[in-house]
Amino acid sequence: MRDCIYLDNNATTRIDEEVVATMLPYLTTYYGNPSSMHKFGGQVSKAVKTAREQVASLLGANDSEIVFTSCGTEGDNAAIKAALLAQPNKRHLITTQVEHPAVLNPFKQLEKQGYTVTYLSVNSQGQLDLDELQASLTGNTALVSLMYANNETGVVFPVEQIGQMVKEYGAIFHVDAVQAVGKIPLNMKNSTVDLLALSGHKIHGPKGIGALYVRRGTKFRPFLVGGHQERGRRGGTENVPGIVALGKAAELACQHLPNIDQERKLRDRLEEGILSTIPHTVVNGHPTQRLPNTSNIGFKYIEGEAILLYLDRQGICASSGSACTSGSLEPSHVLGAMGLPYSVLHGSIRFSLSRYTTSTEIDRVLEVLPGIIDRLRALSPFNSDEAEWLQEQEQAVLAK
Image 1 (cartoon, rainbow, N blue to C red):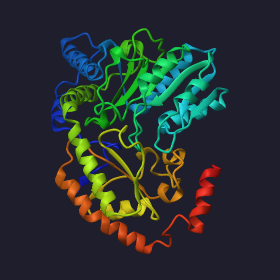
Image 2: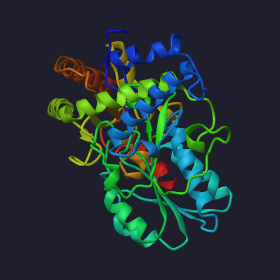
Image 3: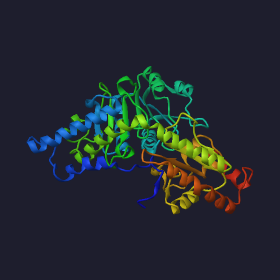
Image 4: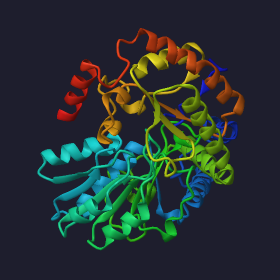
């Protein structure tokens, strides 16, 4: 599978060879503890400092505002916990219906602990209604937590506009930017965001490393309590190889950001090819306010899992939604929140590109996909939205 066409980069990315080369010496030669007083540990501490500066540069932040974590999920959980501990008397939280499980599931737990949670809705293009947010904010709101860009559709939320509204009520603003970092230019120095999470394996770094931006002056109590590491904000001996790798990945992401439009062009070419050759297909999400690498396409009247199986046989990797929910047979909660019909919900595929994606690979997808869809539709008993079974399933989804 070394020669597969990999279009599942919102799930994880290929590690850049430069990142691997930077990381390897810290698995073998430079294995000292960065907290040690001797020179052997001191040289490792310098490498951690450099990586912190590299991540800060990607975010447009100060290096003292960067806390290294194990992943995006830890960053999100740490931010949520810190925000609540900073305002123990406030019991209202706001998020959206289309968040990643790393945010949705902690909020569901908090509801059981007595917090009131508002789940903001989205329209058919995955966009928020800012009037609904305005009506939901109160003086009792402790935290507003939402994603910068959706992992399934790529829809980008107006984060800075939202942040200005949040600040009027004195709430803490947390953003899950796992999908946005490296694809959208960020400048935290001029941002309204208090806490922002990212993950290394989404920017061509390794799995098991991430970072949390904590705006200077934001009250923050650690999620992992232990030693003095990360200025007392995250206990545990530093994952030096991962940290060094994340730093290099961040540096390379900065270098590649000016060329991100190449991914957009290939994404648009893929969409235009599919829509022009395969009938009964739709692009899910806003046509322009999306990540440049992400395309979520609904193929009506067939199952997305069957499409993925046939694509896989051709050496093409895509997905039917978030990798963190792929074990579920339930339709995408993101597409469901958008109110899409059942015929689209179960036949939607996400293609997510990277800087390694080539025009030849896109051509290959466009070559084999029409035949796959034709074959599956020939086997499907449904050929219109009027099919009784489809209507029953759609009503079942709406009832949830």
